[in-house]
Structures are given as C-alpha cells and as structure tokens.
Image (cartoon, rainbow, N blue to C red; front, side):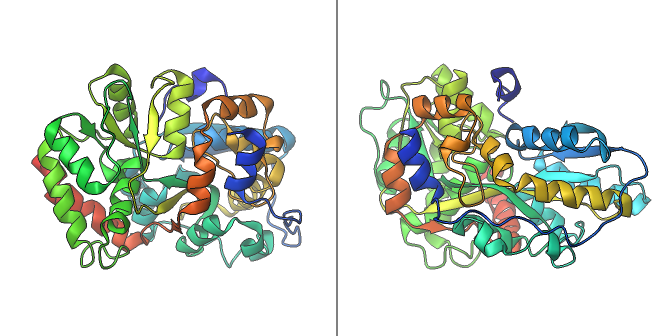
Length: 400
C-alpha cells in the first residue's frame, strides 16, 4: 500500500511475530467450492462499494485483483467512504424508495450492528453456504467468533486482536500508568493530556471501552447496561479530565504527534500505521494496563437488501475470492489492522515485500508476548454494542 493511499487514516520480527500472531496451522487453508452456480451478468458490471470502516486500505488491492482477473464480470469499481453512523439511515432510505445504489458495504462491527438492528442486510449464510464451506476450519479462532456474530448477514474479511492499548510520548510521560487507577490519577494530574475518540466511530475508542470491564473486574463484560457499573463510574470520573472526544481516531493520532495529547487509546494497527506514515513519531511507545484482555475486531463485507440477482452472483464470487490465502496476504498492508489476515496459514512471508519491511521496522517485538500471554475476547454482540454507544453518547460524550 502506497503512502499516498493510506495517508487518510480514515483503520517483530517478521517471521516470529507473523507465526505467533497469525497462528499458522500445519495444513493448508481450505479452498472454496464452485458447486453453486450463480447467474452471470450479460455484460461486465459497475460495482458500487461504500466503506465506513477504513477497510479499503486493506481490501482494495484484493478487490481490484478480482476485477483485473474477471473482466467478464466487473467493468470497474466505484468506491466511496462515509462515517459509520450515517450508513444505516442512508441504506434504509434507499431501500424504502426501491432505489438501492450501494452494492457492497465494507464495515466494522458498528455499521454491521446498526444494519442488523434495522434488517438491512441480504442473507449470505446459509443461502450461499456452498461458496463458503468449513468456515470454522478456514478462519483463525478469533475471526470465527466474529463471523458468528454476523449471524450470516456478512462475511469477515480481516481480523486482529486489536487492544485496548495505550500509546504515549516517552519524552513527555515519565510515570507511565500500568493500572486503571494509575491512569485515572495520571489524567487528574495532567488534565487534557489523555484522549480517546468517540466509541461509535472509532475502533480504538470502542475497544478501549469494551476492554475496561475486564481490567476493572466488572460483573459482566458482555452486558454494558447491567454489568458495567465499575466501567461507567470510571469513564465518568476520567471524563472530568478529558478535554473533548474526537469523532474519529485520526484526530487522536494527530494530536499525539503534534504534542497536544500525551497518552491516547490505540490498537496494534493504529500504533504501527501512523508511525509508518510519520503522523505519530516513531519513538512513541505502547503499554497495556494490568489485567487487560484483548478485544478482537474485524471488518465485514455485507450486501444490502435490494441488490439485483445479477449482481449477487458477482458479489458472492468476489467475497469468496477475498478469502483466498493469496488475497489475504495483501491485508498485512502497512500494518493498519495488524496483523490483518482472517484465515489460517497466511504468514508474513506471503505478504508483499513492502509490507514485510514496514512491519519489521514499525512492528513491536513485545506484541508476540502480549498476544500469546493475554486472553482474547469477542466484542459486544450487535444489540449490546448499540446500547453501549447510546449510553456513552448520552452520559459521557454529551457532557463535552
């Protein structure tokens, strides 16, 4: 991925870290069946893709490779990007008018959950199951958990253990917090210098929120309404010392790099990629709070209701193509969603040389132990996730 493409920021050792993080298995990943025949278009199609997760940085090379090798199916892609909170309303309006002009959605768990809540997605599984056999064997365990959360309405195309991690400027933070209590005390002593972005529109922001119940020992980390008493109390307390909450992660990275913030919430990918781009100084460090659990995150490929049958055949073939090992290797990219591949048997050595070089320089040797030695949890289910967003917006974000 070239610097000018990923500069928007809208989402080790190479051999050892690739093996630990990706969990390379002993057998080759299963291939997909061509048994199910879907309608072929009479002429190559224009496919409209909306990205509400920054996923094009990872998936666009694979999508374009499909177009280049299937010129009988696709004339070209038209890509647009939009904030995740706008997606559900846009799709619902198009479907009500019977004029759906979005063929595929690239989304994180936020946009997926909103669409599931309103019944906006076309069923992929089990309807097209012959195109996606043995998903439990195909996916990495963490990715398969997130695939099940989609309830057959989308397909995971990339995955990573995510966070929550803290990124800080070592020249300005000498007393690095290693517990939630110490982070709270640090924020109180340095008002305005800690920041995280609005969870509803930020992967690191929602990972930070979803990770706190494990760190704080709340009674039910999967129930943000009835099981997060300690978490909400902690968020309200640190809120006193947070100047404002940006609407996206990029702003937090820029402010860390410019020096207006000293500690921010981050994830593995958001640590590596902005340092590669020069937005965050290369010397910035990361740390994890004691007792933390990884909260996995993924991006999904979803198809809105209202897409024509002619396009459905092409889109299903396209999704299956993106899950092939050769295409998954492209997802290492410039570390944006580190590691990135969702399926087994895609070590870093399969990635383009540029990706290998970036991760060798900007990846961190400590990620191997952090990934190996700490539990990996799924994110919230769709309904609780939306409930968490709503409660945070009303009780935390609204105060700023």
